[in-house]
Image (cartoon, rainbow, N blue to C red; front, side):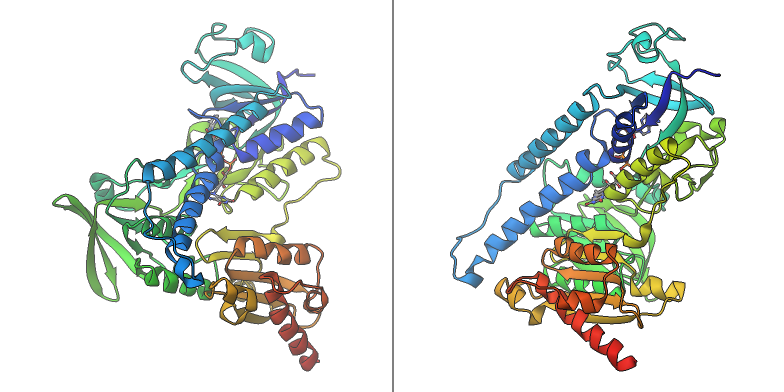
Length: 489
Ligand SMILES: Cc1cc2nc3c(=O)[nH]c(=O)nc-3n(C[C@H](O)[C@H](O)[C@H](O)COP(=O)(O)OP(=O)(O)OC[C@H]3O[C@@H](n4cnc5c(N)ncnc54)[C@H](O)[C@@H]3O)c2cc1C
């Protein structure tokens, strides 16, 4: 029988890769993680979820202080120190990244700082990151095979199974003119030393919207340009419309239904032209933030050497997270579709389960797909949206309730947004929920729990809710739907 260096080699040490490695090591598999980034931590910790949420929270505190008079509180003239805002964010990110580094180096599995690419279906070439080759080849694979020990020279490593978790990278720009003019991406935006006076944001997804509000609340003149009819197009239009309203009220210029035409320098500024309703519009700003999406980071893996199928760069897997090569699995952003941390983690764990227990396979279930945008109000959904129900021909009843008619949100002066429930028209089972409102990302979890247990709107309406809480708002659409279902039968 062929001997391999490892039972499982995980390529990429971000959220998906770490979850896979931890699970594999706990299952007793001889595991290695190969991480090729200049820093350890993965996208979520270093440049994604955590820095953006730290910055957005600072913006929220500033906004609340500016509006303190609403509650009779005098906060005086609210000023800020941008260097300190960024320093707090950086200190927190360092703590999170250090902790992840400790977890990766805890000795439960081998952790090596190197770039990996496939030579064949069971072998990768491992190129240590310059100056990071703290391991010797012998220490990693137990024998010398190519490359001098303790140097940065590439060497080979074999594994019985692989889990690819190499994440995503910023998509290429759609206009060559944009590349010439230059722009920043979210990577640079979370590390700015100084605020631009004005900013054009290209895109209307979660990342674009979160940055739009962050910058606007820190006094930057923000223009957001979105191709679709509304921002946040993965949500139902009612959510995008509500956030557009809030953004405009906060001074953000929002253009939707546009087509990018050109980008050029205009004096010291950068200018972008786009078509909208048959007209050409030009806007200028000090900087452009490119937020038109990310693509799977798979190009340098030489997947063709392992015979692994991709589709527009996305690693194709089945619901067991298995690729067409049965011993190679994938997890996280490199599989495309859902660029969400907890999904990357679940996929990594699912892959390991299916390596260790192929006879009782586990499948990814996206019935409870959650999405959250951390604007204020936050935007969140779980399960089915009206849009998706229409595409899939699923029948449902829907009911909404606004936060401007709810006790706790009125106390908080948080009057924007609504909650919405989708229910099966006969059984009343909750099929989906949406919340655009205060702490929407927290509130949605009540519906996640209800849906996980396949609760009906009748059961949700009958469940006790403390008064006055934001959470009790869910009982109104639940009651309305329960009545609607009763009337229909
Ligand atoms: C600005 C921003 C905000 C976000 N906010 C949220 C949020 O609030 N909530 C949420 O759920 N998601 C959010 N996301 C998405 C989330 O960060 C990603 O879905 C998640 O981090 C993906 O994890 P991953 O393990 O697939 O990839 P990553 O964490 O990117 O890990 C991939 C790792 O693979 C390594 N690698 C790549 N190629 C190789 C190779 N050939 N050899 C060795 N190593 C390699 C990389 O160095 C990297 O460390 C956000 C993303 C961005 C950009």
